[in-house]
Image (cartoon, rainbow, N blue to C red; front, side, top):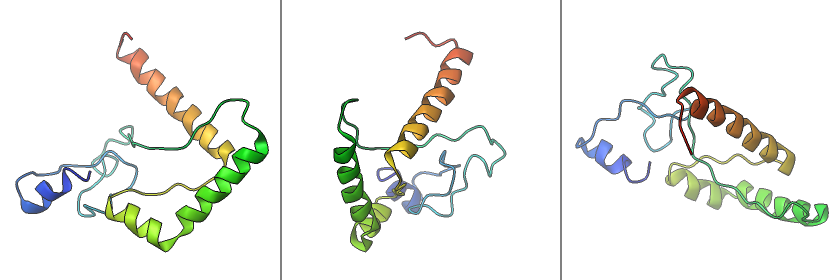
Length: 117
């Protein structure tokens, strides 16, 4: 988004839609694919922190608390929003569920498309 937005704003590029579930803060005038009538087309990029499977629960909790504190900071939220990024603060269990859902969703796409790895 950060590389495309300046071109869209200058008129050199026309954005038809974004693939995120909601409109992007950098280009709020650009509709989503869902709004364009394609409800199955939701593809977000995301980043998170991960550790080894046997990471002690207290360490996971400490790291998560530090992340939640940072993401609650106005300075961090404004900086990320300025880059067109939205935050999804939550627990490690919520992150695990999100990743599992993403794996399920994209596995179906790979299967339906007969994509070979």
